[in-house]
Amino acid sequence: MKIGFDGERVEVPADLGRALLAALRGDRVEPPQAGAFEDLTALVSRLSGLMQHLGVVKELAMSRADATGGYSNRRALGAAAAMAPSQLGRVLEGHGLPRDRRSGGVNLAFAFRTTDDGALHLATEAEVADLPSFTLPFTPAERATAPTDFAGRELTFYYRPQVPIAVADLGRTAGYTLRSTEQGVIACVTEALFDALFGDPRIDPTRPTGR
Image (tube, rainbow, N blue to C red; front, side, top):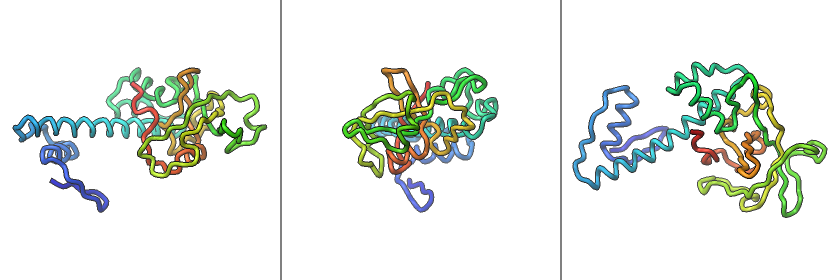
């Protein structure tokens, strides 16, 4: 079976295609028609990959919805995500967003320094003076379509702590994070920093799940 969208067509197992159509239409669940062990395990594998991918898209959409303004409706967002408030808070927190919007903001990374040559990017020395930072090796996902010159180099990131969401203006970078496990820091990134590092937005998020 082939399914298509926006001019592209992909070959999928018939059971997977029927399940996708049923889910999109809101039809009842039908058991797979395949009977052989190999066919059924192949279907399970394809479904697992699909569910993982859709889960990532879901969390990115949740993060972007929450970052659209200073007073997004988390009750409506939780209902749409089919999540209890506590679970929703954990997922959003995993993507660098505050669990409690009334008392928290985001750590916003906006500039970086390449440690091998000491060059500062996207800011002046005065703008990063006295700001907290953390250092990470930059290893973009293999599927990044336009890797930049910074891949494989060690970078020191500068961030402004606890910036209100409405001020951070995350836009299309909402849900993407940098994290230092050594310092226990999760930082959201500005669009300028995102583009400088990756060159193209079609990458895997650094945090596929906040649960």
